[in-house]
Amino acid sequence: MEKLYEGKAKIIYPTDDPQILLAEFKDDATAFNAQKRGTIAQKGIMNARISAALFQLLEQQGIATHYIDQPGDGQMRVKAVQIVPLEIIVRNVAAGSLCRQTGLEKGTVLPFPLVEFYYKNDELGDPLLTRDRVLILNLASLNQLEQLQTKALGINTQLKTFFADCGITLVDFKLEFGLDQEQNLLLADEISPDTCRLWDQQETDPNARVMDKDRFREDLGNVETAYQQVQTRILSQLETLSL
Ligand code: UDP
Image (cartoon, rainbow, N blue to C red):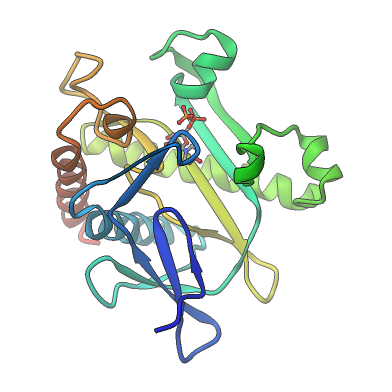
């Protein structure tokens, strides 16, 4: 089948229905704006399953997503949307670029969830934006920005609680949204250990607790095992919620 688009972690194919696309999740892993490359065995299958589970959970809580179903391993059928070129990052605990840019100590619990907008633009290295930069660049309207902020905070509330019930701290994560034909903002892309920082609450050691792509970024080892562990905990927690 002819590819519509190939990104760093997924390939998008058209389907017979122009309103529906097929996303195939890849095992390829990149970090530091694709300067570091590798593969994580079974990642495509695991991330598709994890994302599908989390999208279903969020849909149950009344959050509109692009998710339709999973036709096969590593695959997801999604509603065709026009992706808003913003990476929306929500943080509960300081880590990564927040520590590098502000000097906050890694692990500091933030007094309230921090929502940040980054420009989804590889050439520019995904820079941090301000509200007025978003408006000047015409990346979203003021009304859409407010909706994105509200949706991101609502998603954080749901996911933080869900992950805590899995014994995992949701440190931070990245969201992308898209507009459907009626201009509704739908949660799109993926939510997986590639796009979240997840810390095992049973571990106190700062390396041992990492259950996400930082294991790959920082060469901590046991990347596949960590992703598997996230998948197992999420799926068994969803079963107890009978979802
Ligand atoms: N993130 C992502 N894609 C990006 C940038 C960040 O999924 O292009 C996720 C990342 O995995 C983390 C969160 O967003 O869970 C915050 O990332 P941060 O800004 O701290 O960037 P980093 O330290 O990875 O450069």
